[in-house]
Image (cartoon, rainbow, N blue to C red; front, top):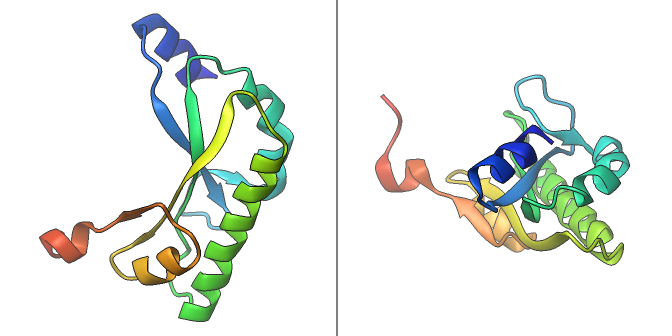
Length: 124
């Protein structure tokens, strides 16, 4: 709601993805599944935000099969939200996957991947 208010004050309507945590991870922020589902009505009232989809980052240390399961769960969550037909929440984008797991993300339906390391190398 703070971002919605700021967008209104600035006269902008940014495109945003909602960050979800399919698995608990103290190192990541975002909604757990049930929290997000409970907040959808309030998020739908954020008229100054263009809520385009979901984004997720898996916890470190997962095997590929676990990462794929997490990405598939995120895809299913997006489809569940889409089927609810919220007027101001679309599920056009699914941002998941980074340099080390982008192929799994694409396999699970990602529309956006983040490839910093593969393009620019390791951070200093």
